[in-house]
Image 1 (cartoon, one colour):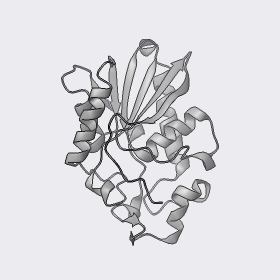
Image 2 (image 1 turned 180 degrees about the horizontal axis):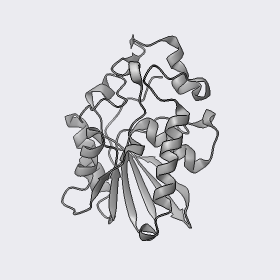
Image 3 (image 1 turned 45 degrees about the vertical axis):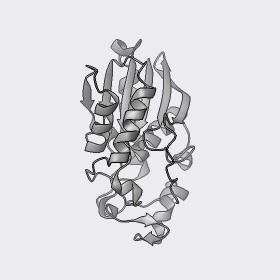
Image 4 (image 1 turned 120 degrees about the vertical axis):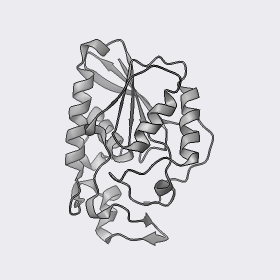
Length: 211
């Protein structure tokens, strides 16, 4: 089994460094362009099934990557983006910081990050993404299949943290993945292993997260 895990394409809120969380923000035109280029990069891979977050930006990314194919696309709540509760909609760029100073722990110190009212912490996201991963890796009918997974920055990092078996302090691994970047995971006897990570099938420049 191989998993191809993709972060969704760019949205206007990504560009403005506005916290999306579980707010259903659509892809922008650039994000759709990235998804189409990613589709070309993955065109030679026959996908048995696609699992996607139920949010529109992830679903549209999946549809664009699989355009012209008959691959079933299934929604799974366990790979939805982290909920940021009261922080959703606020900007976190250096030039327009609208959050409490303690939010900086989100990237710098996940262990001590305090979830806002209505939001999740990293343990919550790691647990539900871990359940999803264990479920998919254990499905016998997919043992010889390629599976596409479209999700979000923090949820994707949770999946990879589970695969690496690392401490919560290493939650972000190599950092926030680029929009539409692909991580390939090989699963043997139910055990996942990262083959390649954060691979972009486009040459477009995307600004890295400042924080």
